[in-house]
Image 1 (tube, chains in turn green, blue):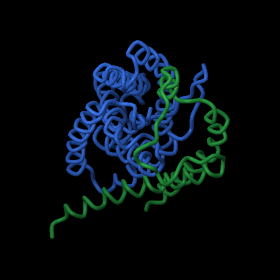
Image 2 (image 1 turned 135 degrees about the horizontal axis):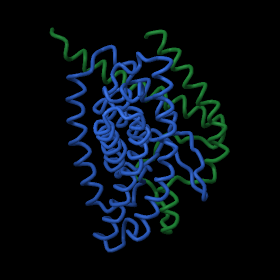
Image 3 (image 1 turned 30 degrees about the vertical axis):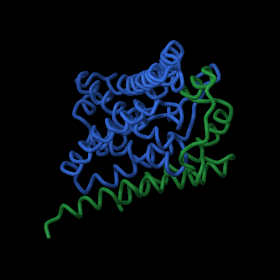
Length: 92
Length: 219
């Protein structure tokens, strides 16, 4: 992996860790545009079909861990998928 | 703007899956043909960065918050088809790993955030032909149009199910439009700022950008 991508990765994670403070200040009570619309309509979320193994955490540390796991998972999925397709394309 | 399970009429979410899968199949073919090896780390890093950025909410007033979608940013940096793949990976991981957005509604979430939002951003960037405001306007419009389409899906669900699913159009359309018109301003500021910053400090990261984005940063 090129050095500049490692640097960029570190920069994103540091910015995230700092920005997460803002996240906890505003996100615990405020819904996003769709959630506010659902609230105004009086719609209550039923039990979801898929029970996800993780959530975004209830505190700063939980959110930070979720962010790092999500970062790694997203990076890994895109990187491995793209590498895999390029490998399949190479002539045998 | 992640739709949960149970909100949409089954016919609407089935149509969402069909449309999203058709568009993403085209995107996969285009990306596999056109993306070179050097682009892969940038795509993966951009996907991971947008995932993280989506977790950070900003208040927009009136007890509502918003967060970056990132579709316009991805389009501005790597083009339309890679942006669709990047947004797909994010929406799928958010749904499967973190329960953000329902599994039945994932087709609609993919349609709104991984197909429509990048497509709107790309069309505006293409039409604006390098205007210096094209990137922020594209970012704002990507959020606003995707939200309007989401509101239309809510309204359609309500109408065809006689109120069993969805939200009354009288409430869904204006509420979604107003909040996302404001949230889109945040998207425009963040996207425009990041693209301008990269153009100044690391112009090589724009090597895959649509030509009009490079023109816009020079304008």
